Amino acid sequence: MRYIEAEGLRLSVIGLGTWQFGTREWGYDNGYATDVATKLTPIARAEPIVAWQARGSARRVMQSIRPLVEDGLVAHVGVSRLSLDQWHKAERALRRPVLSDQVCFSLAGPAPLRDLVPYVAEPGRVVIA
Image 1: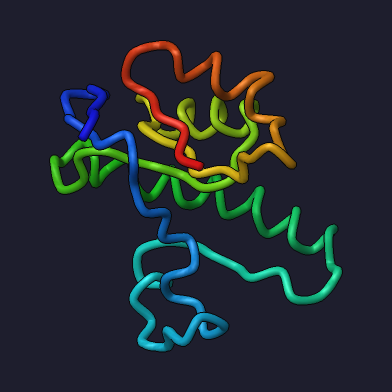
Image 2 (image 1 turned 120 degrees about the horizontal axis):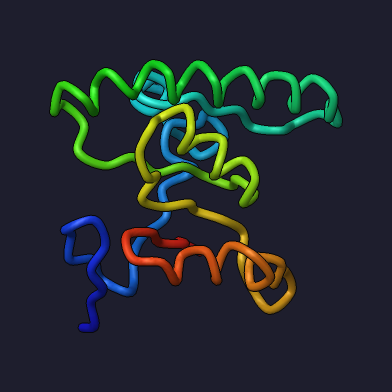
């Protein structure tokens, strides 16, 4: 097994993305993920509403997590599906690095190669595909 170092953590180069955990569509209905993260499943085409919710969520979540990090209750923060600009905004709101961003990344969708992958070349950050 190969590993990388990020923010003092030793991480496997292979991991399991858990974005679907906590959604009813995947059979999880115990409220676990919604207790710890803001999520939505885009069922209908409601781009303006989803974008508005996502912008508000990013501000609320990072401002809410920051005291938990400062108090030592949360050691590291990761996000899902943020653009590089959104990642920077999340770090500004958190006032420290965001460790990881889980993104859609494949041969059919190589967009993260343009900006996210070069950004995580800096020590202490990870892109999870």
